[in-house]
Length: 587
Ligand code: ATP
Ligand code: MG
Image (cartoon, rainbow, N blue to C red):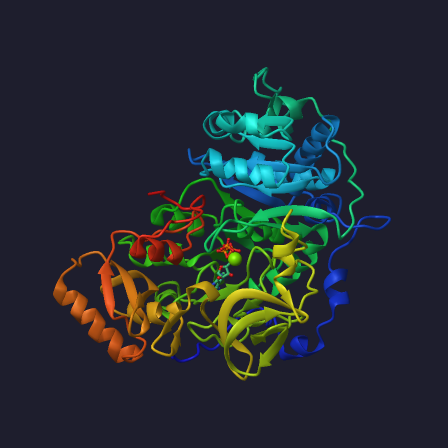
């Protein structure tokens, strides 16, 4: 275990004091948002309208960086005008409260306008990842009973047209012909005349819609978002979230991401995954901040350039991207404005944290949460010491524990290893897996929500990720968490990435097998394999170190960057691969 990193010297006051931990009150978290005049709650009202009619209409809400180099700023007032047009347009088409609006777009302004406009109109936002093929799109739209779809003509042709006949609930398709074109409406540019056979032209439709739209009278318990899980462990599930989740998007971002007035925030996740919505759209706007939206894909030069040029102060990204930056030859520039960097989605190896301290001057702060939790529940916060490799502590208001299940009862362990469980009741908790009531119910036992992850808890409340329940390895009487083995191997300079599985073995039950992706400049060889095994044995002990190491050219991962260990295992054993709809590069 490495030395804790003390909190950085900082001109800003601590974002979470011991007193705040002690005296946290839900009433205060709720009071940070306005609620609708006359009662109720609406995410778009809180994220956009209250700033646009309040003190900050001219503040920049979104900065859009197009692939082609265009840069468009939208103030809160401008964003409000566009989302009001969207809400007017879909309401005129017959959108009713609770209707599902699917979004299948790249990160373009129209996606953000449609998401927030849908919420304002009382619809439910269902973001998809634009790289999905027709079948994943069909399955999700079918589960979600999609009535509206916002997409581009090209994506429609390739991904929707082949399955349109199988989507009986889909009534209206809004086609975004030119990315960013909708922003022209703010400057009186006339809408284009297009009459697509498949549906409505997005800009044309909004050009004819009113800029004045009140707000649907939604309540905190109305469904607002439908998020499909990553499918890392099996078939993706549609997690239902409500408008009241905004209370926790706001509060968790304050604690875990240290959002402060004046911040420029960049969340690199695509809204197709929950991070890209909770923190890529909602949290920064709920705080009235400026949020960066980059249409481009991961590229070290582009990313460093954005961080520097846009003077990003808080950056939220994922371990896969961090590991790619670590092995990129592109030098890390000076980023004097960057105050906090955070990570989510996969275990964050201590090596990544130490790299950041050395190259960025600040660590990556790990944060743990899931599609189901709707927001960050466990994190390393800026004002507390950070232990590289730890996920941090439960945020105020969140009761998290490691547990052992005995049938219908749950034993809470004061320390040690067990299944991570959360006491239900935080505002962004999912309210169901759509159309899968039994699966939802099965997540709750004896008054706890069981997260499906294994963790270790120190007596002081610090949590360490061990592995997913499905990925943990039972070898010769030991329970081995893949993350520990992977992090041990990551310390070797030849290892760029690694994934570990249990391989059935007659004697031991399972043996630990590692798939290693080598760093630039290293070639697979029997000597290197032996060296890595010896290195791991020294670090981890013979019982935990991998018995087999294979060199891989790539690792199967989801489009959100999560390594799919279940696929490595299925391939190793020659078993069926199951649901691979979220796989990045299908075999
Ligand atoms: P599915 O449930 O469909 O298998 P998934 O669990 O990958 O997919 P998400 O909800 O996107 O879908 O991911 C949440 C999971 O990601 C967590 O349960 C955990 O396993 C992993 N995860 C998230 N953050 C962290 C973290 N900081 N450290 C370790 N693992 C994390
Ligand atoms: Mg999951």
